[in-house]
Length: 372
Ligand SMILES: Nc1ncnc2c1ncn2[C@@H]1O[C@H](COP(=O)(O)OP(=O)(O)OP(=O)(O)O)[C@@H](O)[C@H]1O
Ligand SMILES: [Mg+2]
Image (cartoon, rainbow, N blue to C red; front, side, top):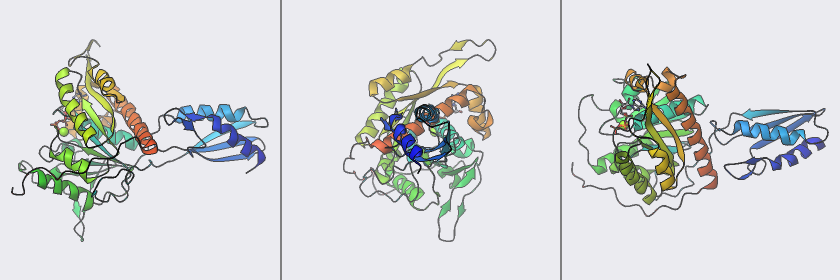
């Protein structure tokens, strides 16, 4: 390293990551400083491909490096970073091995029909658009939605010679759902231990590859699937979805409480179906009230990740098998999902690097009897 490059590196210690509250050199975000004849190139690597702070880092680096005497120009180059990994850093007794899955993110809510599956599908796609490797597990045993939302209903995932399941590839996402494994229209009558076993196999017998994020779409409520998931794997955190009105918030509060008790970090709250903008007259109507998600986030002491408007194209896109982020990327709803994805990615890297999650309580056995 030239003398000037060393001086620039030193100057970069004044540039801080506002989320992690430390400087870019200490956080090892600065991967290298090259200098030739006063022209400096700073190479940065963020802990998530979807880092919303790239612009902040670039401006800070240019300013700090530009002040060093002898520097004539500053260029910033970003490496295509992988998300930092949470798995293995949280102790979950008897956790299944996650192999090379770097982060498990649950999308949950205490309440049904608030848009968990819609948020999970679009979050997965928006994270993929930011350059991350993403997989999606539909853990809604009783009412799987993702085969419809990803347009793969009726397709069967490949089973390998050693009896392992390869997730389907849909819109660049590896997808697995119980809906792809049971005959369509047949109801699933499973008790707690069977749900636990099925979810365990989704982790142990499935070839997920090495995703930065495995997004898990959970069923409504605070039942067996939520409990099993928190006992099976070290989750990076949960995204709680709510609609703005009080009746939804009451249920989501229960969901937050359950995750807290099982020591799963809450990444934040998404308010879905925030407002409706009439496509004819552009009048905004708060069909399900206004601002409830944001107020709840403050009350629960968790970040507000963003709101998604009610938009008929969100529903239509889900039903047509191409979620709105992919089918109408210019729409306000798609933009909202992209903002939420960046906020989630940012929260994941903060969770991973600061490890704010407390130790888990000893695992309770899965609920239910053993007969079906
Ligand atoms: N922002 C939105 N605008 C318009 N329609 C939406 C929006 N979000 C979700 N929907 C629609 O609302 C319905 C319920 O959404 P979704 O299936 O995602 O909810 P859920 O919480 O996963 O439901 P469940 O509890 O049954 O799993 C779907 O038809 C979906 O397309
Ligand atoms: Mg659902």
